[in-house]
Image 1: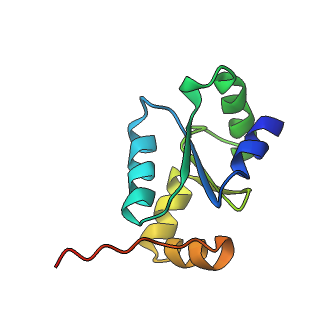
Image 2: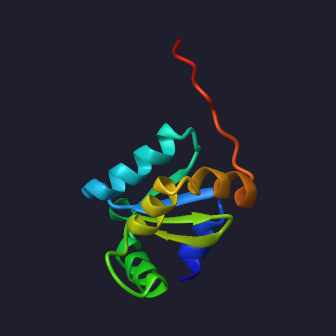
Length: 109
């Protein structure tokens, strides 16, 4: 659990994923598309990944343990929480107001 919390506080937004997980890819892409410079930590590329996966499952209380997003070192939630925040128009304001994220805005016109 200590390692998860240490990694979760390394940047304003941290996402724990597995490289083979399609929902992990979707959530990571969502943050990238929003212009958030999130730290993505792939558990299957970490020697202590299984241990961290168990710690994340314990934090969430129910599965699956990834993807999981932390903001400001605090647990925000898994896929359903992130998607409901996004679809409800609450994700970006939360990231800006709570975690002081800045966004890279692209203008393709």
